[in-house]
Length: 572
Image (cartoon, rainbow, N blue to C red; front, side):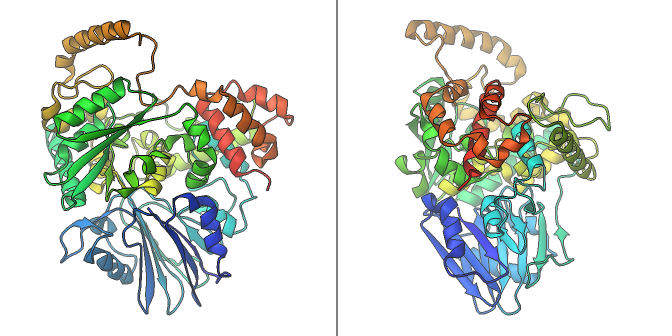
């Protein structure tokens, strides 16, 4: 999908294009610029995009993402297709004060530029699945690009750098760059001809704890219908639909909910044809779908470091863009839609339910004696302020939603941020109905996959005999799975012995320790040393050898993130 970069001050032709090309040139079909007395705008159009920019004599509008549009008199469907895109353009002329979640559903960001008077308006989706960043009259969907145009790409916020390395995200609304902030989720707001915000900010939605369901069964029915409706509206009119299908149950439920009509092409990535791939293939076959397997090479992630790090920027983990390269070799970017099962565990199964903690307790941080104490204190303060903001609309579950809302707080959010730039990604579990339900129901309904299983069991029926790649059958509940799990473990253990796979890696991801201990990782560290980056300021030590000894004890993902930040913020 596309990205935009806007400046309220008119820029020299080619300036914004050059910045976007730096970060997104590897996935751009074209980068178009627009200029006027109102300022300058550049838009990346990816090869898989529909109609991104609509312009008339009064305004220019940019639609980023693949949301479902529900704008009368048009039938609900993908917003970038047919007359719905023009309807979005016209809707944006009405001003901020609308219930935008009723008109645009799932991840999106929209910009309207007023060509006659200057200024314009920004609208973000319910959780900032596609975030917008701003600084000094510059707006855009890529934080690092905004920082560069605003002249702040060397102004590293040391607190955010420490925050990223500790928690894998920068506390909202902060970014890695001083003066560059994230626009709020579920918000529409106008800006004037100088790029300054007007006093008409409209927060049109929040994930509140108001539970409208009489019981878990009612919520389960509503959840299943929400998934079915989203898929009817997003892909029911398409001839073909792609699906990222793992060996788990979340994407399998999506597969079971796809309406009749589209030819379904499923895809799975792994290091070799292991259990994850075998289970995904059996699940696809049960629903009549075709499965394509993408085999990763040992240096898959590090080979793509520079390109993927630029692609997602400094706020997310480049390692989560598992499909880079496969978008071309497997033909994913040629599909009109590629569905996924992202965030089901987070929103619907209580994945981020915190341990009991007394109200007002300081935010807990990982032990990091190698980092400056003043920065650790500042990170804890930021996280505490953020939690208090969440408590305004989630008074009892703010701790859970610290990892969920906005979406940039999720440490694995780059999975979507990368995918959307590689192909026409659409995540059904990001729909308004699903996220709203997840926020409304009690946490106890979600835990132990109780709500999810009750909702999705009818969708699992065609694959009742296909197990999860781990240790259960998705179709069956906890009680029925007790004896089935015993038999499954015995059968898989016997197979591993007979095939010599006793210690083989059976999951979808690599062994990250092997990645950071590889010769290529050593080469990358030499090419992009942390001491050549302002990120080195977060450490107590100043010598490269001391920092490297401390970092060698970190979790591999944290080591890879440090390499990413060292590359992105290196001296040029």
